[in-house]
Amino acid sequence: MRAWLKARVGEPLLRMLREGSSPQRLAWSLAVGLALGVTPLVGTSTLLCVGAGFLFRLNQPAMQLVNYAAYPLQVALLIPFIRLGERLFGAPPLPLSLSVLQAALKADAWGALHLFWGSFWHAGVAWLVVVPLPTLFLAWLLTPLLRATSGTFRRS
Image (cartoon, rainbow, N blue to C red; front, side, top):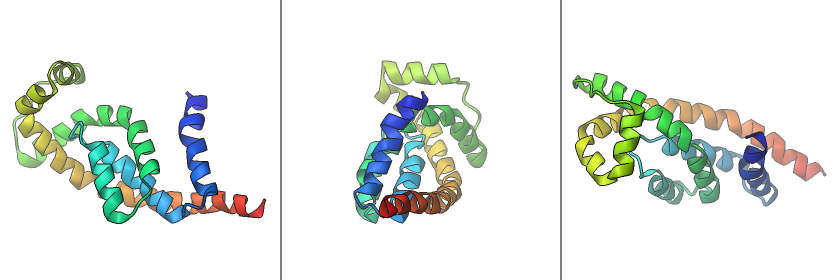
């Protein structure tokens, strides 16, 4: 797993820094890509990343890299976002599990979206409530790290 992460995530990010990507813009690209990558609105994260990247002039390859790497986290956070959305809206809890949800999405994605539309809508609102602060914190945390990393390229 570590070798895969290094080859698929670490090396491309280092290449972006070597090629002149701004550490701050790259940090924001990674933070926003992760935030959009965990959206409970399954199947929309790529399009959301393209839109946000275009709107805020962020690094599309970095955003998509983190977006795709975030897929396991998106799946893991799906039920918690649904449950938080139910609480926010006072909706009755839907009897579901991750395996039921995955099976429904795999069998008929559009049918599952229709069946769970209210829950996904509530989960999307919960995601909008939760995601801004961690995104800001991650961008704030990554900026000096990437700046220090890019500084090592300039000195050598």
